[in-house]
Image (cartoon, rainbow, N blue to C red; front, top):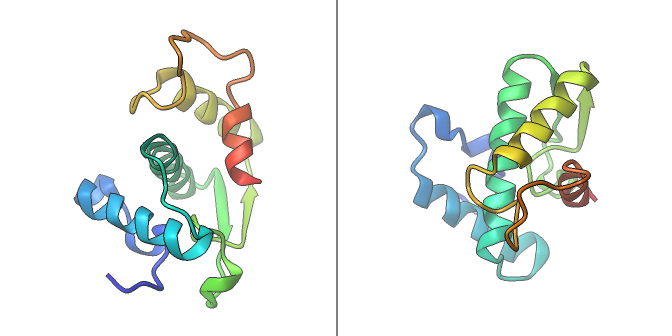
Length: 125
């Protein structure tokens, strides 16, 4: 994989993308874009978020505006995200956090987060 790839350009684990390749891509992007080694919990959160966002893009809940220049895109591979159905978007983000498939959202024994969208919006910042 080229170092200039972004997650949304090269990744769709629902279509057979190997999880180790995905993790390596995240690690490379973290090192290049953020200049830090990404912790496993952060990597799992970004991975899970990207999969949900790709699903929402495929169902036309949202649309990504991507630049041809990688430096203008965020680490997730887009410059801007336009949400067409805010209610569905919010429900899916809440579901992702509360289901906690990768055990990365509900930490320290928590069964629920008062504002489940909070950690996700922190990633967008």
